[in-house]
Length: 167
Image 1 (tube, rainbow, N blue to C red):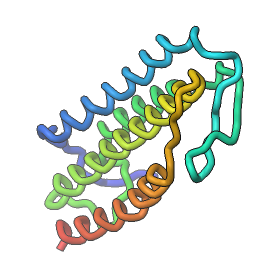
Image 2: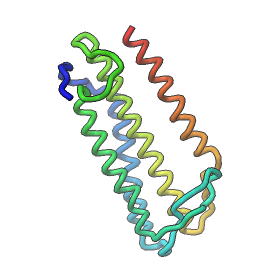
Image 3: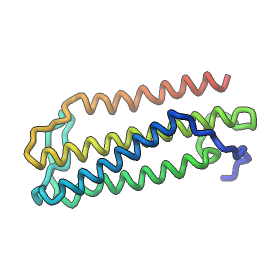
């Protein structure tokens, strides 16, 4: 669908650089840790955790590469998407007057989404590797509650902020 939204460059602030840097660092650490640990892992590793954080599924160790590969694809995809804020979805009509503040908020949401995804992927890879090495590692209830809480609270906060900047 073609839109007539303004195409403007959104200035990158310090927080944007920090969030992108942390996301890239988490992705690199996940890849490096997987590479360094891979040869020492058994052929069958923990690959699924229940709501309590306990291991309830196993897979061949090649499956360990799934999250780093998904992380690379996700990171690059969201990074590229952020270059084109005029194609993002908005709840208001975007004009020249409100474009910068809406584009800035939208690109920041995408950046934080990227950060949370890299953090989640890295934690899961870490748990899989540590569990496969025989170390006691469980997510516990905190992981599930944190993910669910952030999934509910973050959009609500964004909605209130979005309304604030557009009134």
